[in-house]
Length: 443
Image 1 (cartoon, rainbow, N blue to C red):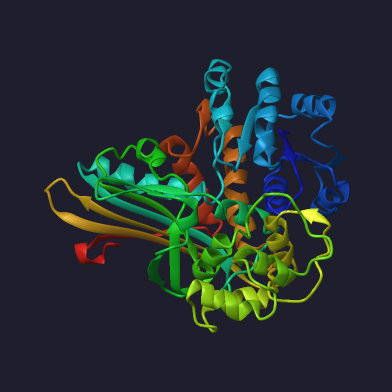
Image 2 (cartoon, rainbow, N blue to C red):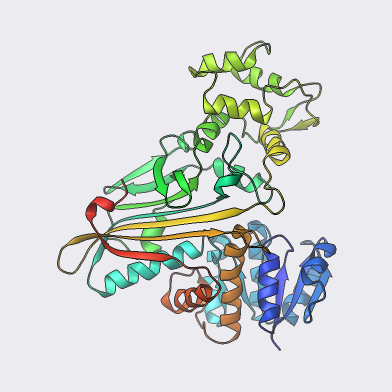
């Protein structure tokens, strides 16, 4: 029986482990918190939990050597270390993270060894790539070309849970979302490269009405230009990858960023309260800081961003329970206290791809594909939609259905087609609409 090593026992590990155990693979979950791994495995046959930390290189090497494939669910900065051990022992590797420059350097070595290091096989990135590329390849196969692509995705609370001023709740630590909020973005619009500096990331979001999810906003996601080559759409005039949010997230985060409340600069908080942090940022005495901030920003007192900061606690007299740290730490701490998705509450993953194409007859049409996935009784939607593409890929690799080599992402038909087919049997499906009028395109 084939053996799978899973590194990490976070929320993604559960759906991966259970899928693989249900498909008669033996698994080992190696985690610094063995109790988490034990809980995932429970009483299921074929599962083993091991206590392990990333600095235990000797045990990592032994575990990789003893298993047929490794799934790294560790923080992204550790994937390359794992990949090097996989290369040494001629073992395949799967991650759900973006390919780093260091990981890409292992491409030739993996190819020569006949190994597949498959990355970006989650939901975003992952399911987005596969569902986009399936349409692109069909358009090209039929003699058409892509003029515009908007690829949008978001992991959010279900509409009934979007009941705080940010319209957002976290399924796990806020750190990752807040870290991404410090990014800038780059995309192609009407053949012009648009650079969005970090301070403008949340300004001017797209407005989209998504069936069953309601009115949504979208801000740009990282560097969309990379996907012109990855998707093979050099002919495209517009390529935009974006992130869905409920209304008011962008307004609130724009003010938080403008105040420097996502800075990583270390400072002394001893003896300070939260409103003093805001008052220092705008150079005023702390009394009536909410009113002073609204005046400084030329906003009404009931503006969503002012309301959000007030609700979060940044105008409070509460003392900061942290001697030294950054405003990033403070914002993450407040959000962790007030914005976690309650146990049993629904989350959702929303995905939309909108294409403007020119078919082989020179006629323009719009293609749209949508997915709206809600949590199940067992798993959150984000855990399920990140985990199952990776789990399915592991099964297909071990069963010889995927035979690609090198450092890859799932934009190759021999990878995305069998993965998407299997995901549909698990209830994860994108609904495609072809032949829509040009008036249906996004702007």
